[in-house]
Length: 283
Image (cartoon, rainbow, N blue to C red; front, side, top):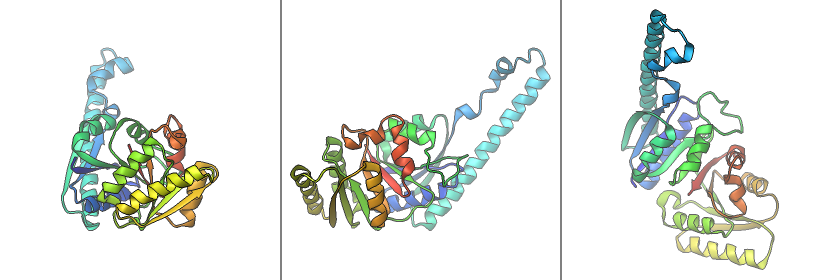
């Protein structure tokens, strides 16, 4: 695992993706790969046109449509190359040094899965092209990627702010413990104050679980502030984040835990789309 892979498209969030990826590349001292994927579904092979529109023997129309399709594909390629050049310029301005660019045809999910072995972290925008970047919703590509890949994903919103502190949503589950172990050994969040937050009833068991997690992070060198709060998980975490001016939320994904409801099925959208800050999802 070496690369930080930033998924670049034509959305307004792409600049935030560049900023976040450049920050991660510097924190992890890892190469940054800027990736643009042209979805093959957007550019159907010309041979499929006759069957889809039923033109029969009107070959001149087929030829014109084929030419238009080829032109559209070339323009999309050129547009993608331009986006990657702009993304590289932005990332270098942010301080990233070791940068490569790649353009691929195909499915985004399949492409990311193919590159997983050499990837340390994926960086994606919450919304892609064709969306209002201020909307609290979730792009379909992101949801598919979160379901499929097994590397951490840094999800950015409209603006990325280099974190001054982070919130780790902890619930003592197996998933949370694995996420805790990853945080402890990774340089990504080193030197950042950690707010260790558990949402649940104020019981001796929960207090002890929180204290144990605090101890592990403290031994790893983190400055930890712990909190045990009651209420709805999503709203409680959001309120705490606002109150303490936190820039980044860290959570484990796909675990048998109280937080699991936010990462299964359509509930994935509820957690990620509601956030006003970037999220680091740990698989």
